[in-house]
Amino acid sequence: MTAIGWIQILLYCAIIVALTKPLGWYMTRVFSGERTFLSPVLRPVESAIYWAGGVDERREQHWLTYTVAMLLFHVGGFLIIYGVMRLQAILPFNPAGQSAVAEDLSFNTAISFITNTNWQNYGGESTLSYLTQMVGLTHQNFLSAATGIVLAIALIRGFARASARTVGNFWVDITRCTLYVLLPICVVYTLFLVWQGMPQTLGDYVEATTLEGAKQTIAVGPVASQVAIKMLGTNGGGFFNANAAHPFENPTALSNFVQMISIFVLGAALTNVFGRMVGNQRQGWAILAVMGVLFLAGVFVTYWAEASGTTTLNALGLTGGNMEGKEVRFGIVASSLFAVITTAASCGAVNAMHDSFTALGGMIPLINIELGEIIVGGVGSGMYGMLLFVVLAIFVAGLMVGRTPEYVGKKIEAREVKMAMLAILILPLMMLGWTAVAVVLPSAVASMANAGPHGFTEVLYAYTSATGNNGSAFAGLSGNTFFYNLTLASAMFVGRFLMIVPAMAIAGSLVQKKSIPPSMGTFPTTGSLFVGLVVGVILIVGGLTFFPALALGPIVEHLAMISGATF
Image 1 (cartoon, rainbow, N blue to C red):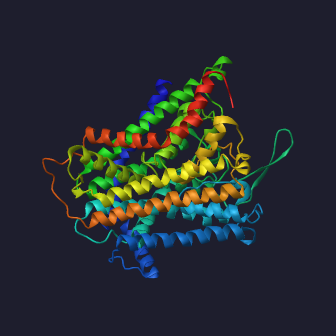
Image 2 (image 1 turned 180 degrees about the vertical axis):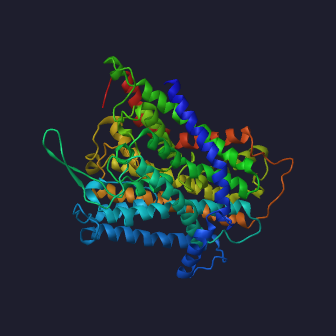
């Protein structure tokens, strides 16, 4: 580890904190229906959308109606993606002549993109046409990201409102999120990426002649527009198979740094939105502090592990750290930081191969996802995931003092705790359950590129990534098989929607409750004691749930590495 490396990390954190408050202020105005500087241009467009869709923007919805609307909306998204992939051979904007995508792969990919996972069992440049990339994937990147944000807003309204019955209007919220938040940022962001050297064209693939005289096909396409929303919306699906390690998706050190900022910026800003909507910004800063503690701990371990290298590398005199699977133009610190960021958020974009990280360096991204990607997390999903742990931590605090716990003026009672536990327990059911099946099924084991604990970690990471709606992978696993396409799709679906429903039930329960003023017995939720309690609850729940699986994978691999064994 170097001083320059830590300066990069601290600069990154400082920029995220600096952007949190102004962006939080702007997003609060958007979702409160207040006028913004973009209203003169976008308000007529917004009104036209409501007119065309028959939406009354003044009519709000019960939590159950809001949730059903969201689910039906995603049925439409699934059908669009699946249909475009199956028909892409006869559709326009297909200069490379890509054939129709197989049924099971189309099914897996459609589920992947409606759940904001963007797990990819294919290479984008060799499988998908421009139309599929744009109409099928890029458009869903906007809508799945907007869905996560508006669900977080609905849950925040549950805490902020008192004696109400509605949590907002899904159609209004998702329209405003897309029009006022995602689209304007992505337009500017796309232009920046093009300036950095990223392709944005509908032209044919380029034929080039190498120095040896061989012919090479260079894939191009509408790349910058997809990369902008895949990062900002924490989607992560790459236009190219190598994702953000590809020079056309991440040309420079500056583009890499800005992409890392964009992954976190909306998720961090939602903590400020929470504080503003409940009437106390310190509540939002306390939640961001919890996220920051866990994030910095993960960055330290990953950076240390990758900078230290392995016993085998050091024995060969290669003491500069583990550069296997990393781009020279980024180096160890930017690769380690990117890995922690993309798994702390449910992004899944990668600028290095996690399969080539050291055992402990690869374990931290795995743990980030297993905890539910609540360390800033995916846009919206990280916020409502963190609030579920806050509910659990407040319940624990109430048990300690023998009184009904409260949070931002709302009593946390049995219904909220049960729903929070249900949502939290959904994740390990899919992560560990499907891993257990895959490592004993011969056809599934055949897809593992490595034996021993590293091979086990490849499978565990796949189902953890799918359930956590992350989308990154230990690339040694060949996932494009009928078994993995279907089981990973089921994990993605359950990890997204069976976590959303309990969270929305909590919103519906809380919004009806009266707001009570703090008393002498109220547990303060803006200080270091609260931050420590929430961090402790998260680590205890994660440790009790996942430590046995981690012991079978990266931990035993690290111990074997120390003794000189490799897999």
